[in-house]
Amino acid sequence: MKTYRIAAIPGDGIGVEVIAAGIEVLQALAARDGSFDFAFDHFDWGSDYYKRTGLMMPEDGREQIKGHDAIFFGAVGAPDVPDHVTLWGLRLAICQPFDQYANVRPTRVLPGITSPLRSVSGPELDWVIVRENSEGEYAGVGGRVHKGFPEEVATDVSMMTRSGVARIIRYAFRLARSRPRKLLTVVTKSNAQRHAMVMWDEIAAEVAAEFPDVTWDKMLVDAMTMRMVIKPQSIDTIVATNLHADILSDLAAALAGSLGIAPTANLNPERAFPSMFEPIHGSAFDIAGQGIANPIGTFWTATMMLDHLGEPAASARLMRAIERVTADASFHTPDLGGKATTRQVTDAVIAAIAGDN
Ligand code: ATP
Ligand code: MG
Image 1 (spheres, rainbow, N blue to C red):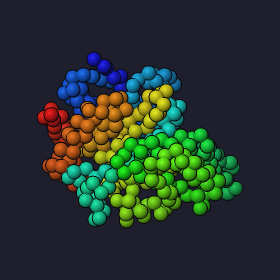
Image 2 (cartoon, protein in one colour):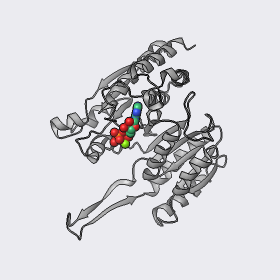
Image 3 (cartoon, helix red, strand yellow):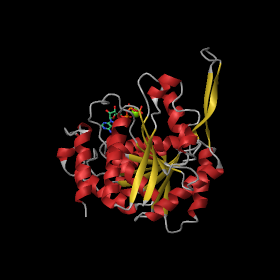
Image 4 (cartoon, rainbow, N blue to C red):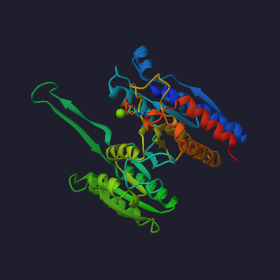
């Protein structure tokens, strides 16, 4: 029997609650399937670890997880630790060295969940956003001089490389080709940012020639936000820079009903390093410890992890269980307007897995 070694990094706040729920569900799936199993290694890295040690993860943290089949990640961030410390100290400290350059974010209105868009009833909103995850606006290039003086100058340089742009656009074309509508929108801001964004447009046109069966268009990011609201049916796969896709995907998550249901995968498509799977939401300290965090985003994330591990049947089974549960409003957590707890939703999904044929 195949045993997948998973590095579980729950992190902070509700990350701890949803990863515990996700592990229970994955174990129920393995038991139901019978042909594979999981071995979870738990790592208590995050803001508490930082308060004890001054680091978000140990110096050799990446060494400890580089041999795992996947990383199952909760969320980081705490009210009393600066955001850039938690982000750069753990999440990006894994994403960047492990070259997880494709951040993939499916967005769909699940059964029983209402989109705030009046024009959308379920299946009309079915997107996947591909976010460049290794360079661009979040490359970390820049600096500050004359700190605190009136003459202070600060820069954040958006660094784009031809190879980095080409590989993410090629990944997005491949993904668009695998989806029924074979439709891709390449998002840039090449009217105002006239160097890297113009290169992005040029590379998109070059890569497009390799995919004659994919219909593609390009769009400025500001216009794209309007199109997502006004003509959601016209969109299928989206590819955008690190910053642009960060913003578009929060909008997409909200349009699909709640941040609490949105999943994401940080992929190293070449599989030289483990990929990392996490719900989109953060540590949400306003609701942490109350047992009311919506675990659906983490369960959906687990389906992406199963696909990546090569278990598409188990992934599909989990997705069916999720949809059966969201369709029943008595299993909606408070973020969806209901009263259900994390425990109740988790038990309902586990029961749906057991009852699935
Ligand atoms: P971060 O700084 O890491 O983004 P955050 O504390 O700002 O984290 P977010 O995760 O961005 O929190 O979420 C914003 C709000 O959405 C939360 O404060 C919470 O009320 C709600 N929310 C997010 N995720 C969930 C969830 N899984 N279940 C229920 N509510 C959620
Ligand atoms: Mg936030």
